[in-house]
Image (cartoon, rainbow, N blue to C red; front, side, top):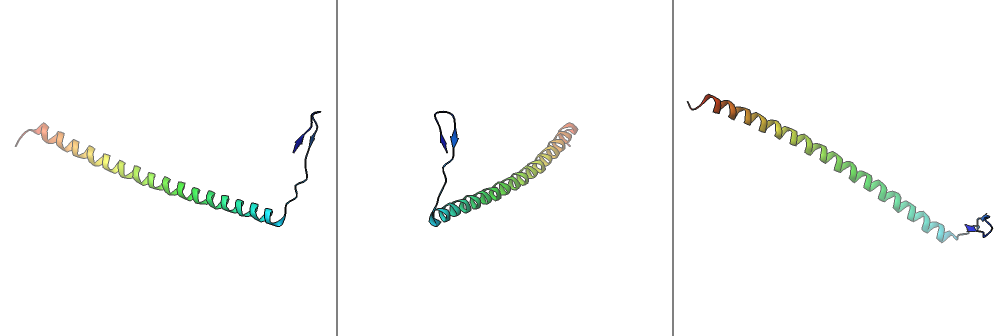
Length: 79
């Protein structure tokens, strides 16, 4: 792309040899592979986070149950 002083835009013809084209192709393939790999990692991270949240909810329920039992036992007094 070349911008003219008078405001006219002109495009240069791009000519590449087969080696340049293959290099570009390999770069695109590598970028695509990296993108797919990152997407998988993000999915695994999200799944792990969801499992962690479920475990946290279970533990909170257990703590609440234990607190309720202890309050009930302390309200009744020593036996």
